[in-house]
Structures are given as structure tokens and as C-alpha cells.
Image (cartoon, rainbow, N blue to C red; front, side, top):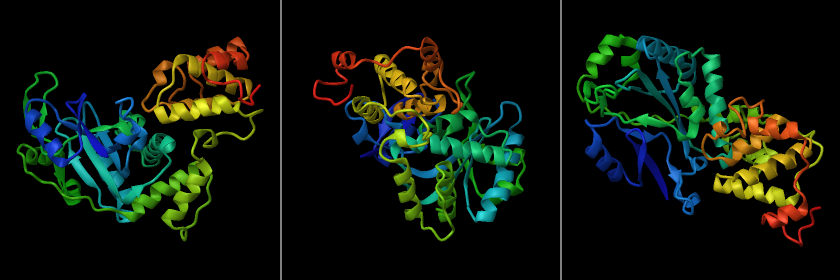
Length: 357
């Protein structure tokens, strides 16, 4: 069953139906800034832990958050630039919102959800947003939005903006505008229109071209050849074949010395499904890969695939996909051998009948 998270902005509730979300908005609107997750998630993947598995996000849209602390007009310029240079040529009609605070939110919506293997969703979305920011010089596209990708929270339309300093409504509402209003109105006019709850809520205009643009980018990430004549389903199947059911085959260089032992591969698979790994298990995985001759970026990819939230601060990977986390650097520097079979058995990772050595 799918649910959407609600926050103020801390995540405080799961909303399985529209009425659940409406009840939270009614309770907090005018008292707290109201947020909801950009995506919905599948609770079948997190029943044991009770923790949201963000890799189950249904990718049916791309969300952009344009922020600037001092000059919101710069955000408006970036929004207009993106509409002119990306949306208009592809005939994409975005949804655009003035947040009521320091910027704008935008969605471009897919015709159907993009079914990527769970463990590559976060990276695929993050890299796509980085690509668009760089290509179109979107200086105000927020890096937090980019790095959090599938787990982002967004302001809820037609809710009051609450001052973060004084804790009271500012009089400005999170308001949806049409493309024409965004292109033809200046920033003062837009804020003036947002001084009351207009109730404006325009439904998504779903775009096959937006969907395909994203899928082709993911294909390029994994060096999958594609042509205009390839169907979307064909490309998704190619991605699935290239990436596989376990992250070890996705984005990994082919020139490492030796693969992990079967019991360690199974440990990695289990932890990818759980979205978590203990410190001891991380050491097992890291030493296995280091002694196997794996490159830093490939080891980081494995740990990035395991965690279902940003764990970069724990030192197992970094935001730079080509660099290792500090924990990996430390272990590599110590030149420690991988765990022995007896040690793996004592830790419950291996067993006597396992064919590893």
C-alpha cells in the first residue's frame, strides 16, 4: 500500500488516503508550515523496520526547488529560463508554485511512473537534477533538493506561509500559477496575487517527452545505447538488464581483481533490502571489496545503494561519486586483510556449508 508523508516540516504522519492528508492540513494550516513528500512510497518494503524506504518512491514526476535567501527574483529568472529552454521545446507544461517564502517549486509530470530498480532511483534522480542545473545554468536550483532527491518534502499548495522567526502567518500563501502568469507577471505582482488563498489547483499535464528525456538520461548513465525508435518499455527493460537486481552490477567498473565471496554478496543483498547496515557489517563489506581490488567510487556506490537515506556523514561514502568516504580511506590505509571464514561464521554472516574460503 502506498502512502505520502506529511511534515511541519519534520515528518510526523503517513497519509494513505487524500482524507488523511486533508485532516493534517486542517489541523496545522495557519499554525505551522505544511509539507508533504514529493513522492509516495510502498509500505510493504518497511513493515519490519517501520522506517520509510525511500527507494520505493513512485517516480511519476520531477520536482524542482528554486531558492534564494536574498533575491527571489533570481529564482523567477531561473524558472522562466528553464521553461523557455527545456519545457517549451519539448512541449512540456510544468506545474509552478510560489512557495510563499523565498522561492518557487516546479513539477514536470510523466505520462506513467518510471519503473527503475529501487537501488538506483536516488542516484538517477540526483544525477538528472545535477545535469539540468549545470546545462541550463539554474543557479538557484537548491542543492538540498538535488541531494535528497527521492526523499524531498515540498510546501503544500494553498497553505499559509508561517514566519520561521516570529512563528506567525506572513499573509502570503503557497500559490500555484499558470505558465502564462509566470512569464507575464513580475515578482511583486505574483506576491500580490498570493496574499490570499486563491484555491488555484491545476492538475498535472502528463508528458511522455518528459518521461522519455529522464529515461534516456538514465540509459546514458549506464552506457545503454538508445534511439528515437526505441519504446519506453524497451529502454526500461534495458536498464533493468544492465543494472540487475543487486547494485553490484550497476555503475561498477569491470576491472576489479576478484568478486566478493557469495556469503558477503548475500549480506549486501540483505542490507540493500533493509536499507541499513551495522558498523561491523560495513567493515566486512568494505574489507572484502578493498582486498578484491575495487576502486573507491565502486565501493562508495555499494554503500550508497545500501542506505535508504543520506548516510554520507557516517563516512561510508561522499556526495562526490568518485571519492571514498573517510571510513573507506581509513580501512584502506590500514591494509587489513578481509575477514576470515571462521570470523564470518562467528558473526553469523557465513556457515560451515558455504563454499567460500
